[in-house]
Structures are given as C-alpha cells and as structure tokens.
Amino acid sequence: MCQNHISEEKYAALSAYIDSLPDKNIALIAVLHKAQEIFKYLPKEVQCFIAEKLDIPVSKVYGVVTFYSYFTTEPRGEHVINVCMGTACFVRGAASVLEEFQNQLNIKVGETTADGRFTLEVLRCVGACGLAPVVTIDDRVYGHFTKDQVSKLLTEYSR
Image (tube, rainbow, N blue to C red; front, side, top):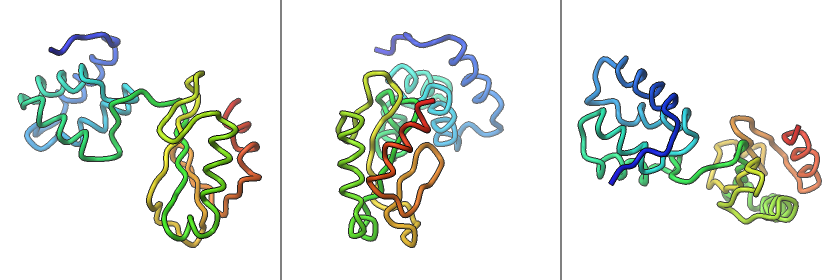
C-alpha cells in the first residue's frame, strides 16, 4: 500500500525529527508541519511513514492532512501565491488581481505552472483587512495590491 518513491535523505531528516520529540502521542500536527517543510507536500508514502513512526493508523494521518487546508497532498510550486478573497479584499478588487495572476501565469486557482515555479491559491481571509486587497507569496504579505503590480511581483520572484 505504501511504496517509497521519495529521497531517503528527506526520510532520514523526518525520522530524526520524530525521534527527537519527547512525546510522540501528541505530535501529529507538528510532525506533519515538519514533513511538509521537508517534502513540500504530503504524498501517501510520507503519510504512511509518519503513521508507522508514530504508531497510529494511516487513516488518522490522512484525516488530519485533509481536514486542515494548510496541508497539501499535491506538489506545489517553489512559490505559493495566495490571493485573499475575503469580503474586504473582494470588495476592493481582489477578483481582478486574481484574474491577472491567472492570465500572466496561464494557470487556474489550485494549479502550478509547468516550470514548477508558482502555485496559485485563494484564501478566505488573511486577517489584514485594512490592507485590502492582500496577496501573499510564501510568507510575505503584500497589501493594497492591484492588478498592475502582478507583473512586477512575478518578475521579482522569477529571479
């Protein structure tokens, strides 16, 4: 059921992290965060590995992975672009910003560019309504964002 097609070095790093934890019984979410940091996503093989290391059913791991939107089971781009579509951002033009990203990247929401550089996502609220509309790339927040800024931002992250 769980075959390994991923780098042994990455598994070794995750294994060392899990082994360093004082209480594995309460560590699932922390382990999933670390695994996603290492692998960039959580494929079935990684979920099986975590289940075995924590001595829990794979179904429990899968349930947590699919419940929280932070976790992903699909590979993502080097840079993840999120356009906030919460009420304040939407009212202030987030839809046109999203449309411009889709046009320039030639992808739709949830997709990754062919070169693996960008993944485009939407969020419901970033919690920065005073800066609406808001775009995040990786961990950086860009407020008062307009569709005219899309090209410059993509160029900045393409270097």
